Image (cartoon, rainbow, N blue to C red; front, top):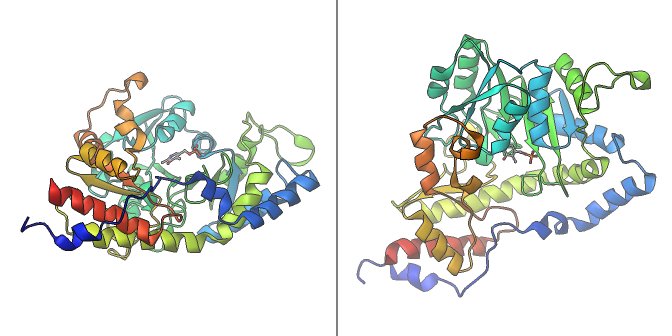
Length: 384
Ligand SMILES: *Cc1c(COP(=O)(O)O)cnc(C)c1O
């Protein structure tokens, strides 16, 4: 009993339900503004590629500090379109981390190229040294995935890409507003993508995505690709394209979201600080870097991902106390899904997936809820 910090045990509040994510909050938080924006679109009958798409694209490009943003149906299409626009396909290899959502690799696959899976580094992002060892004469691009709202060390990636003549395609689906040395995720290479899936940093009311670049001719090519290859006057078809447009209704909603986004980022960083202050001393858990602990990185905490001893036990226990957590992506790196027939062994990634856990992280989480989660985790390790 001596070793148990009484103050911690006493401070556990009565049972509370803390869901992992509150989907109704996606609409509920600024309901009146969304309703007004949607009514404007609906009543004017402006459904496909209308004013709000154009304005959202401009506002997003301004927010990120790049020349072009192109609204598309989702981030998976965004990646495929980016690769196709750079003529990356059949016979080409693209290096991506296995620690990512399957969509990163699926986009490479559907562009016709081969995804080559890379280890993760101690920052949980692509291991640039391992990536270098995978470069062959077929490698055309490297796809850093900016996970959990953190941007990889882009100096190292640009250095590798420069030496090996590779394109950089940033999967920034989880990193809107995240920065490395003051530069926004998605704008560090030639092309980057964002997802507006409801649970993402800015989530629309369905699927949505964007591609960003400062390369004018690439942008023009990607605009053709998202709309059946059509461009110019009269709908002239200039190349084979796809149908992957961002709905005007979703663009109108995203304009509202973007206006409130600096508050959202600040709130996520506050919650991360509460988790960090409460858990940093526990040796059984490994935390992401605290906000501002490394001034080269500005993290926006799409997720708060810890690694923990006895992860499954901790997760069950938190769940019994009402706190829902998630083991990302079925607990596997992409190369571990046997249905995809990938031959790779990536020990660091495989080990990570035995220990990782996402704590509730979104702007609906209150300070009191975050403190409850902290106290429960401390209690778990102190008592068992
Ligand atoms: C969500 C996500 C995607 C896919 O985004 P969609 O908009 O759902 O297609 C791709 N990569 C990563 C890392 C993601 O988190």
